[in-house]
Amino acid sequence: SRILVTGANGFIGNHIIKLLLEKTQHQVHAVVRTPEKSLALQKVHGHSPRLTVHIVPDITAPDAFVQPAQLCHAIVHLASPFIASSSNIEEDLLIPSIRGVQAICHAADANETVKRLVYCSSFAAVFNPAPEGSSPSKVYTEEDWNPTTYDQAKNAPALIYAYQASKAFAEQEAWNLSKEQNRWDMVSLCPGVVFGPPVEGTISTVTELGQSNGIIWGLFDQETVPETKVPVWTSVASLAEANISALTTPDAGGERFLLVNGSYENQELCDLIRASNVNHTTKDRLPKGDPGHRTHELWRADGSKAAQYLSFSQPTLEETILPLKDYLLRLEADK
Ligand code: NDP
Image 1: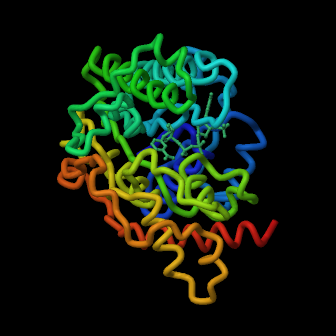
Image 2: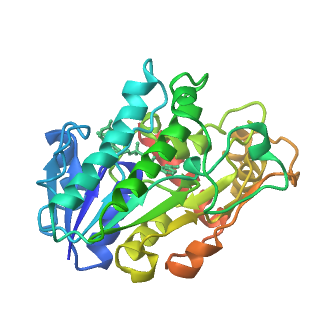
């Protein structure tokens, strides 16, 4: 089969491309924004003859993905802004995320070989940022939706709220468009905060880390343990596996999945990293906080539906975080 992957050069995209090339026989068609990113992607993946890269400078153009999706059987749509700063939330976040979805659904409509869209939504599209959304008894499921309105998102006091809402608007639009026809179906995956080492060769300094791994790097050299904002995590390796499983699992069609490996808090991350270090160099760089203390009143997410339908591994937090810590220290030392 031929698979199209948008946002291919991102943190998650690179993992999906790598797994598709290593573990499947699919022909992989990737979309990036510039010729430079195309060259870099091909280099990272060893100039594989099974990887074709398409350049789409503007995902908001209605026909953006029509040609790249030609003869494709399924699509993984990842391209969406995940940014740390913005002076215009609507232009930088809301419009590209929603129009990107419209363009990918249009490409699926326009190419009759396409049978499935695996859409990478987020736990952000599920989470209610209002205080009641964080009540200790709350257990999130696939039934939950971020209730932020478009106007609230446009005028959000902090970018994180607008990002979270952008994922909900885009996912809702994808569901609406997928239900307008019957030839292709959609699977939406809603991962928590995605942790794990980036694919080797994709970044060269810690400043290029994405938002989620940036949380781990952000614990280094702090005086105190920062507050845990979104306490559910997903391993990037599991997310890549789940995406590949979602491409071909018939029963997953039309379903939404919370894809979470577990809950975490920053104190736990500090404890794990500090305890892992025999020569004490990293230990002293992480805040000690209150070792072993766990806030038992955190809300949770129920990932059981995904585990039932899709195949993906369930590593522990430790198995995910410690290799990431080693990777981050190597990256720092190499600069
Ligand atoms: P990255 O920032 O590493 O990758 C984002 C990808 O989307 C890049 O390929 C980027 O291209 C592309 N992109 C961003 N903005 C635009 C735009 N305006 N037009 C076209 N392409 C754009 O992030 P991740 O790999 O972490 O995220 C990938 C997807 O997963 C996103 O949809 C994100 O919302 C979702 N997700 C991520 C989570 C996480 O914790 N990391 C959690 C849940 C969901 P370029 O390099 O050219 O900017």
